[in-house]
Image (cartoon, rainbow, N blue to C red):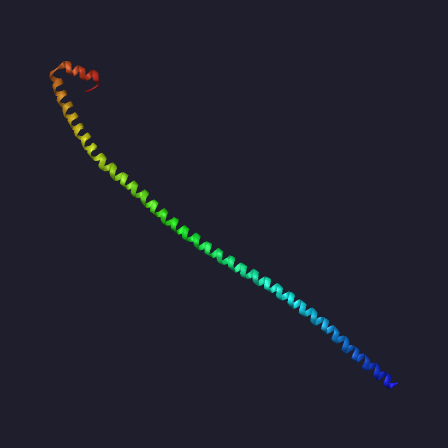
Amino acid sequence: MMQKIHFAILGFFFLGLFSNGFSQDVTNRQILEKLEKLEIRMERVEGKINNMDVRITRLEEGQKSIQRQIDDLRGLLYVILAGMFGLIGFVLWDRRTALAPAVKRVEALEKKEESLEKALKEFALKKPRLAEAFRYAGIS
């Protein structure tokens, strides 16, 4: 009977080893399949990361290009503003130089008018008819 127990124990032991071996083989296959799937996923993720790196690089280049254009426009704006202020300065200077002779001529004509009016008033003192014409015209 003892032999039967030993034989049964050995049978269970070998059955356990064999069944354990088969289950390990299935598990190893499953692990390998999962690892392959994981590698495929990682390759896809790496591809997406590389694609994102390319996109980020393009965005950075685009930003640099836009910044250069903004700098160029800023320089152009400064040139335009300087031109406008220069033009305003030129117009003011030209006005003063163009008006100076006219102002001198008006002053000279005013002096002549005052002299002529003074002379006519003195003459009107001697001629009553001229004094009456001055009063009628509103010149006193």
